[in-house]
Structure formats: C-alpha cells, structure tokens
Length: 273
Image (cartoon, rainbow, N blue to C red):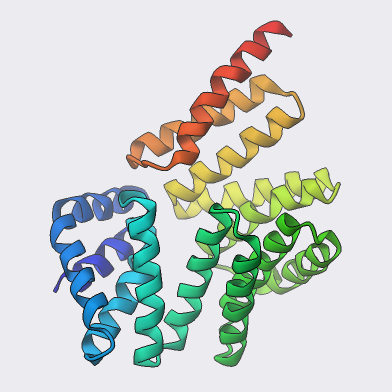
C-alpha cells in the first residue's frame, strides 16, 4: 500500500505546479509509514519477489520526492536497495534508473570514477532495452562525469553526442533537466553562446512543465555562472529566484544553503563595485 502511496507522491510531483506541492504534502503526511514499507521491502527483497518489486519502486519512482525529504544516507540506501530489487525482479528499466540515481549520488560525493561506471552501466541497460531517454540521460551524465574527472576531450565527445541524440525528444521536463545540466559544461568548454542558449531552453521547458526543483537548480546554476563572470547583481537575482522556489517546496538540500551563503558574499562584492 505505502509503495503505491510513494508512487502517487512521485506521480503528483512530476505533474508540476500545485500538483507537485500535493505530492510533497502527501509524502510528509505518510513519511513514517513510507519509510517502514521501504525498510521491509529492502530487508526481504532477496527472498520475496513482491518485496523486490516494491524495493525497486521505492528506489526509482520515489527517488525525486524522497531526495527532497530524506537525509543523504537514507536516499542512498533507497537507491541501492532499489537497484538490488530491480535485479531480483528482472526490471531492467528500473535498474537503469537506479544506476543513474546512484551515479548522481556519487557525483555529489565527488566519487567521479564510480559515477562514470554507474552511468556507463545505465547506458548499456538503456541501449539493451532500446530506451532512448535512458541513452540520452546516461550519455549526458557521462559527459559531466568525465569532465569532472579531468578527461575533457572524452567529455566533449559525449557532449556532442548528447546534443545529437536530444534533437528528437519532446518531453519538457526531460529536456529541461538535460539542457540545465549541459549548459555549465558548454561554458567550461568555452562556448558561452551555446551555454546561454541551453539555459534559455532549460528555463522555457521547465516553466512549461512547472518542475519547481529543477527550475530552482537551473536558476542556481545560472547564479553561480553569473558570479564567475563577476555579474553579481544578476547572480543575486537568479539566486533569489532559486531560493524562493526552494522555500516553496521546502527543500532541505545543502545546495540552497550554500547558495544563500554565497548570495551574502555577492552582495558585498556588488556593493564594492
């Protein structure tokens, strides 16, 4: 039952706008029961096929909402057991998503080689089941992973591959996420015009899908890039947008705490100039 509640929370969240807030509210109301259900599924997934399926659902369909409401170590546990559940139940689609999520968590911990391994495995799974969005997402994340590892030429190659793959995609939320992640890479590769175009595409797509978290993260990326260019007034403006959205969804992410701290520094630098 509580696995389905988690799925409903995720479904509402993905609908965007007011529905996203309903999904978060429902998760908050049922949080204790949801965590208990996930723990049961995780402990029994090796012996029980239903538990394996439920663990997979918690770790994939519940990931976005859980990542806004649970501490990092619990989110990681959800993702790891979700991957185990996907393997045990033979759900390759969920396995690919679990690998992408695990790779992202490794990026956050600066475990770049492990992240690349996860993204490469995710792409292999997506190619095997002919899931184009999975191929696009994993290729884009591989580009980020190789750049952070210092392998810039490989990162550029994968970046161009992603640009070619994404041309036929139409889902706004998916496109917004991809474009938002690619724009900072374009700046790092020295193409600020392309980066501005990608940021614009990301914002347009995410405004249409009303994904508040991805919008907040995109505004955060833009704020930091403006600050790097010493456009502190613009950086503060975009930081305000991001923080307002983060407050709206009651995000506990350390990213927005760091942004608030940097905003104070930017205000001092703006006043100096």
